[in-house]
Image (cartoon, rainbow, N blue to C red):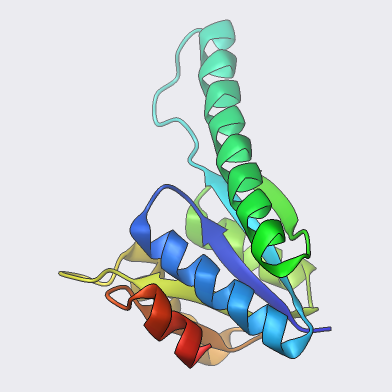
Length: 150
């Protein structure tokens, strides 16, 4: 079964990548893995405060991923696999790909304007050494264009 990995956050790029991955998975009989990332806190507060801050960030990521999963299940009839990880985004994604050889493609979306975004920039430089193809979806596509291309 083909598995399409996409990163879920509150950006428009994540929504575009998710739509493409969902449509592609539906057409190939595959499924989607959603990876929600929680950035480690840059400061070191008192132990209890630090733990509370990290737990709240994790909770927000889980709610976001669950919401996206619900939309995906509604559209495709399949529930995606959800993972929430804490750490540096590039390292976490690379580790996830290493731990999940069933992933057929990493699906990211470039920003509609300006720079493509930090994940797209990082992974395009690493594309030759990734264990799967990298799909970069233009962020300015309409839903109809995404559906047509997927």
